[in-house]
Length: 240
Image (cartoon, rainbow, N blue to C red):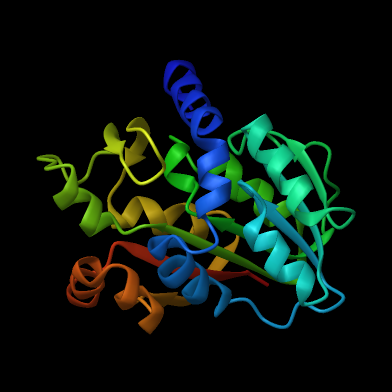
């Protein structure tokens, strides 16, 4: 990713890591929209090796470890990794690393599942990242990702050039004080092609709806998300 934007993303996550970790268990978009739908695409994990790419404070890892998975996670934010280790005590392996860089420390065909939740929009060009996911996955493995929905992003950022992959920024207000968040908006084709052109077949794609718990905490967005998706969840399998 562009160095300047990468540094801004890292700085933002370092700044909000504590509040993010504190709120993540029940923050509606994460707890009652992203996680239940994304986890629904992950098959039985007991005894399986899972790579949690861009693991944040380790909430996904916590849930997967509770189901018997062996989880390795990494994140660009050192503070997030600290929280992931703290949250998971002696379980799991967590380290600091950038999603956009080669996963040189991980062996070929060493994971049954690669999970990457709400993080790929921080990477300008997905090609290397998806190739690395393909390399570290076992032939019978699964890649499960959740991303910002490209149609929602196009509307939200009031873009006028749908087919471009372009840097965008907005202000997050849900994790304490307002924080500027940089990312990349891209069209639907640029979300699918990196998978299908680098050794994957799309196994399942869902445009998620929030679960009922969401409505109790945020009825306004519950209605909005039932009318139009904000995220998209994809399960891909290595092409034989």
